[in-house]
Each structure stands twice: as structure tokens, then as C-alpha cells.
Length: 478
Image (cartoon, rainbow, N blue to C red):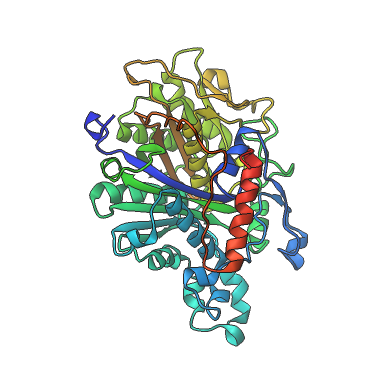
């Protein structure tokens, strides 16, 4: 299907990267999701110290070795590197990997109108550095810990001249970043966009504050939509996607993973407290997103929930989905929903990009992975009345019947992300048609072929070879 078929405003996702607890890359993430695995565990040894750490819940989806970084690869001197926030480092790595996945080399980016949009909320590293400013800080410290510089750091390294914007709308930051990137692409100010979200808990205080708010699970798991739901567990990591306008991606011969058909954002000011959501505002952002995408509500086959597993948030989100989508579907065909937070925890400002990447992979594999920790529904969530169902098992994506709202039988999904202060965002995705025919194998394919590797140092080359061997062993190719 071409842009002339009514997808003039569609965007193509042509590259993806990620690093989450239990998953260093998209392939590992898919294996974790499809198998119903969990990356939730204990805080890495030595990460937190002091009195605050003793009183902070220690269960979550944490990354190992966040202090490791190949500074010279990114043109950062040994003098500057210690003052660069690990969240900036992670964004550089994820941005590079997403461009690699999109088959885009850096020399093709320099000087182009590539936009960089990054969602982030925390500034733990600035707080860690603060006591040492007088004695240790150099001229590099200010840019190294400024949250607003995060997207600029990525753009500067790549030599990109498009918009460069760091977004903080609390937990919806990275999905709002994607919404802004889409607007930039459609307006023509960006020719391509790199959208990223990162989140690290380098201090225990931010986790402790969430616990004091009553947002964290005392059971150490995220029980989304379940009767045991009592909060979420924190998560770490991030992800990135490369976006282009569909016509540009087709002209460039890109591999298209899926389409972004539309998105919407709004504010929710009417709750009983600053952090209390309302079904009306969430329903409104859903309706606006599908209207912008030109997709009928009954065409949606799956929604990736914000899904924190909080006693207040889950029933509100379910009611909004029932109103905006569930009631439009035929009886007996409920809308499937799930939450990646059950696998890897709540990544704060990077939560939206985590959910988005889960759906990108689900569309690619045409399978819906299970949402974990669901046994009995929250009594405040009448799933049957709302025409919803929690995706409990891995299974093929439901092929929606051709109907007025979905004549092409597309696979359509939504991704929700809601900020603590009321900034809501919803993004609409669909699969991509047509798919290229599967290549035919040569008559006498060799049993072994060489695999070329390159790196800037001997150590990096050995590391790349080790990771390749590990990946091949995992999927049985070597």
C-alpha cells in the first residue's frame, strides 16, 4: 500500500534499539516477552549506599554495569567522561544502535535535518556530583549533568541539524517525544527523527519518594489489572526508534517495521489530586489519537497499557478504554490489553518508548506476548462490561475481520503513556503492507559463511565477537 492510499500522514519506523533488564537488544527483548519472562530482580550490588538505601525497596528491573562507557568512541575525552551523566551515555549508545538497525551510517546523518527527541525525567547524576562541585568539577560538569542538553549531546555527536528537544512530561516523556517528532516530520522541519527515552536510578532517593507516595508495590511485582495490584516496581534502561515519513522511507528503500498512523496528547486537570487521573481525559486522548490516525475504534486489535498496577490508575485506565474502544467492538470480541511493566518494571520517562518497542516487535512477529502476573481481575475493573481482556498467553495476533472500520484487515495497536501530573499521550501503530516476498535460497547455499566485524580498538573487537557468538548460541545459528 502506498502513501496515495490514504496514508499521506503515516510515519514509518525503520530502526529500533533497546536496553532493558534482562534484554540487551530487541531480539533478546522479544525472547523475554514471548516466553513470558521477567527481568525484575534486585538492585545490583554496590549501586546504592547510605541511610536512604537501607529504607528503599530493592526490587525492580535494573541494568548491570551502568558505569561502563566507551567514551572515546563518542569523541568524549577522558577528562570530560566522568562528568557525563550515564543517561546521556545510554542515549548515545541507543541512538547509534537504532541508526545501525535502520542501516543508516553516521556519514549520511551529518549535516542533515535529523531531529533528535529524547524523553527523560531524572537527574540523579547531578545530585551525585553536587557535593563534589567545589573540589572536582571542571568546565565539562554543567553540560554533563544538564537534563536539557541530553538530546543536544546526541545531535552534536551525529552532526544533525534538525530540531533537538529534551522532553520531560513525567512518565509520559518518551511517548510525548515521539508525538513531537511526528509533528516535526509532518511539518517538514525534520527529514528523519531519532526518538529516545532513558531512565536510570543512580540514587535510592527517587525510588524512596515513589514508595512514600504509595506508588510502589509491596509485593515486588507489577500486577496490572489484577486484584493484587498495589503499585509498580521501578525499572531502568531505555529505547530508541528511527522515524521517517512513509514516502521518504519508500523512496529510500528502507526496511519498514511498522507505521505510526497518528497520536494525541492532552492534560488531565480534573482529578481529586494532582496525581489522580480521570477516565474522561484518558478517553478523550484515545479518541483524538484514532481520529488523527483515521482509524475506527473497532479496528484496534491490541492496546499496550500505561498499566502501572496501581489501585487508582488501573480502574481509571480500564474505564477509559471501555468507553473509547471496547464499546465499539462486537460482543464476544473483547479488546486485548497488556503491560510491559509486568516484565521489566516502570521506566519512568522511558516507559512509553518501552511499551512502543514491545508493540513494534509484536507487529513484526505478528504475535501478542503475555502480560504477566494476571490471575483474577481487579473487582473495580469489570472486564466483560468494558469488552476488554488481559492478554494472558502468547498467541498469534488476532486477524481483525474486514469491516467498514478496517477494510484492509490491518493489524492495529495503540500505546498509552500517562504522566503523573496529567500529561497523557496515545500513539496508534499498524503493520505494513505489502511485505516483500521471501528471498529464495540459492541452489547450492554454502554451509558456512564468513561474518565480518570491525571496531575501533582490539578490546572492542573482541567484545563484539563475544556478543555475536553469544547471540548465535542463543538462537541456535552457531
